[in-house]
Length: 437
Image 1 (cartoon, rainbow, N blue to C red):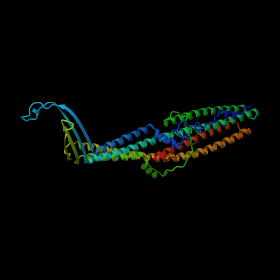
Image 2: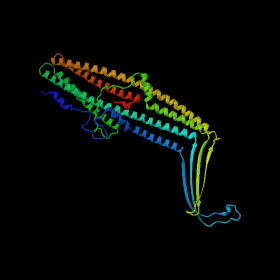
Image 3: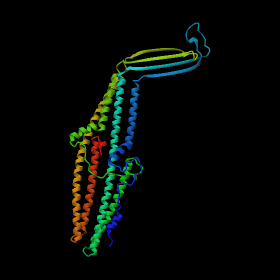
């Protein structure tokens, strides 16, 4: 009689969490959850676009700074010309002159000494650039969280394959026992048939699990912007590492408000709009600047005469058709809208922090219940196998017991995935996803 335990061993090919060697030097091997999160933060398309926005915002700061710095320009020209002396209006100077050369050079420089509006706009641009930086950080955290979720799904798929391999080994052993008992005349033939059906079902589930594993690896490779999933070697299992997060809801909310990039970005954006509002009001103040100009001209390049002028200019705005008051009113409305948005973001952060703690506590309880459930199912299976070998029970009991183990293993894997997901979500909700280990 064939021993189906060896048949199952031949069918169940041992699997690892990835191929033996990684082909990409840029991808750590093995890849941990924390490393996958960091890769997601670096490689995410939206995060890359957000970093480009930082560059644009920094350039805007440079433009505003330039408004406060000295400006110098120079020009030079040569021309061949004639002149109608009748235009001068001198009675004895009449007619058109013979053609002659004219060399002309000019240099001009100016410096703003006082312009409250320009200075306020510069400070507003600095705050806007900081807001863009926090926006990029928030988008990067979202991309990192997505990578973490994909990593956990891939780990879950690997764990599921391992569970189905163990189920296949058990099913093969039960089928082998059933055939031995039928051959010995202890059990009816239907017990062998039931065991064969159960073994085929478990094999089918194993094939499905392997397909889901490969699909999860492909999805993880896509999230990490990798060309192939073959180089991925995953390190982490579905464990329950310690958490370094505040678990009290009020403390967690305060922690999240302080550490979330979204709240910091909105605060900087509100500050920038407040300074822009001040800049409009400051346009009513006088502006003070200095300037100088040097001019050189002559008919020959080696005989050029220079003149100069310099002075101080005070500009006092008087009336612009009431445009400034209307612009001020428009900016006030925009600022009020921004404050409403900032409050909404803060409320959203608070809700996410509280939800993360709830999900984390629930996930911890689910893992504890799932472990107990699997232990009881394994005890049930051991007792059913003992009764089956003794000939006092049929294959129905062992099949049902193995089904309980099958369900219990799935429940434990899912509970651990839920915990891992809740853990990643909690670190992101509290703004410290980069501290996850």
